[in-house]
Amino acid sequence: MAILDIVFYPDPRLKEECETVSEITDDIRKLLDNMAETMYDAPGIGLAGPQVGSNLRVCIVDVGGSDAEEGDEEEEVKPKDGSTLYKLINPRIVSKSGEIDSEEGCLSIPTIREKVTRAESVVVQALNERGEELEIQADGILSICLQHEIDHLDGVLFIDYLSRLKLQLVKSKLKKLIL
Image (cartoon, rainbow, N blue to C red):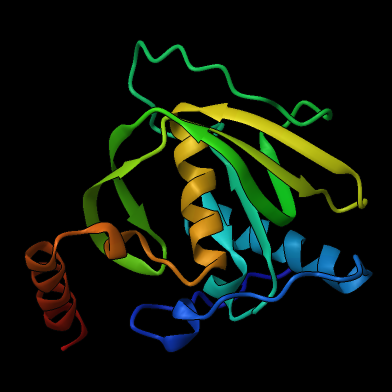
C-alpha cells in the first residue's frame, strides 16, 4: 500500500462530478487500500476519490476512532469483519431524514472547520470491494461523514453550504495560509 497525495482546495478536480465505476478490478481495490492508508496517515475519518486525484465514485469512511462527544449513544452499522472501515463503490443516498448541525472539516481544506446543516440520518446503498451490495442505515457522525464524502463525489464541498459571507471569510483565511 502507498500513501497518496491529497488534493487541496481550490484545485478544480474537487469540483468535478465523478464517474461511476463500471467494473471492480484489482486497480479499484488497490486504490481503496491506498486511500485507507492515506486517510489514517492524515489523520481523517473519510476520504473520497477526488481528494486523491481519482475521478471515480469511490470513498472510504471510518468513524470508529472519531472524536464523537461523550454521551453520544449513536449506533453505527459495522462491516461484517468487525472493523469500522467502509470501502464504498458508487455510493448513493437513497433516503434521509431529520436535520443536524455539526462542525465539519476536510482533509482537502486544512485548518478550516465550520458548522454545516445535514440530514440527521441517511440510508446509503453502495457496493463493497467484492462487488456485494451494501445498505448502510446511519445516524450521528457516520451519517454526517457519509454525506460529506458522497458530496465530494458530486463535486460539492462542505464550504459550499456556507453563507456567502462565511465563504468569503474562509477563502480569505485560506489565501493567508497559502501565502
